[in-house]
Image (cartoon, rainbow, N blue to C red; front, side):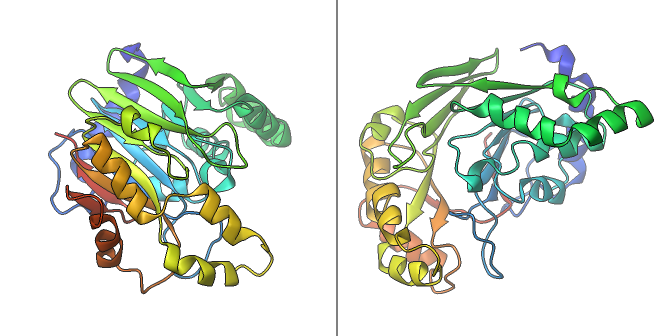
Length: 315
């Protein structure tokens, strides 16, 4: 990685680290600390009065930010924790469902609106480049007007899209990112992502049904961030979505029930299991204790029940 690209962003991130709360962690991390922030934890695209924001996460390591998934609201969540949007550098999309990619265009667009002038690399499954291009075409008038009227750089040249497949996604002196194709029908190009830093490994399951190969992919990880569904509550969730006649079939075929999440974590021998992408996320009866108890049937290690803006220091 060329660190010279981050001179401006690094100073902004340093100010961010020292002056902002960094979410709702139990303790305030030290200035400049490496961390994982769960920005949104909801599974599915629906927006309701009581629910977290759709799934997205942020890793900061050595002052470099990595955003994982960009569901609706990710820009607001980043602003809420004080993240300087012009410091955006890497964005990773696990699959092309809207609760994971709806702001793949608007996040860098909003960063550009308040000062982005350095390169942003967006990694996603096949179609990532086409999605970005479509966004630039639909906003051609605004982009070119602001370039001419306000002297801004060309956003279309700052943002680079990369389509990845299973295997290595990208590598720098700080991190190696790799992908495992998971099982999230009917989407074929859906992936788990592994971030291997110097001394820490973080794995994101992505959206997937119970998928035993994920245990090998996540073997010994410091943190496995895994989606989770609570089967007894799925029928009621489907009834709250009357225009989705086969939703419950999709949920059972494409997501991992809590006990199976525990099985993956146990087989992988992970140091910490982090639950996110809750299905359902709008049921107040599903307290953190309920989710923990369900996973505890098959996993006896540390469990972190995600909530929006939860900050986890990485040491």
